[in-house]
Length: 131
Image 1 (tube, helix red, strand yellow):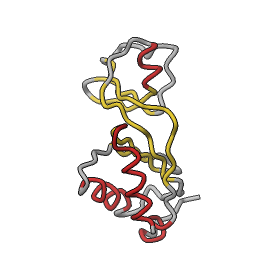
Image 2: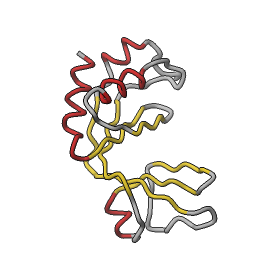
Image 3: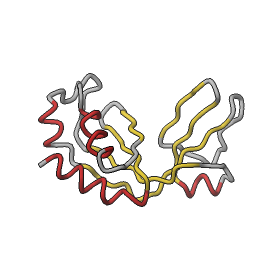
């Protein structure tokens, strides 16, 4: 399965779905082990260290510093990793309303991390974009 590449089809069928938990971004310096109690939803290695995306509850339980309390919105369409313009259209729409977004593309879906206080508005705007 390679996923959908047609931009208009992706926008029409994106079906944004709110995840219940509040998420945060943490970082660990290179060489520091991830606490065993932590199950991040995403990780990324950078020269400065390891970025972890996890629930706020897990970060607090592990006593990790964090930033950007946010909600995750999963776009429930199997988008191709080669699709052109999908996230550009979505992030541009949110940007025109002053909503920051950190997008993560995985094999099947794209996931948007938006500020907790603006999450409902973000979902509304995405639903408008898909109609």
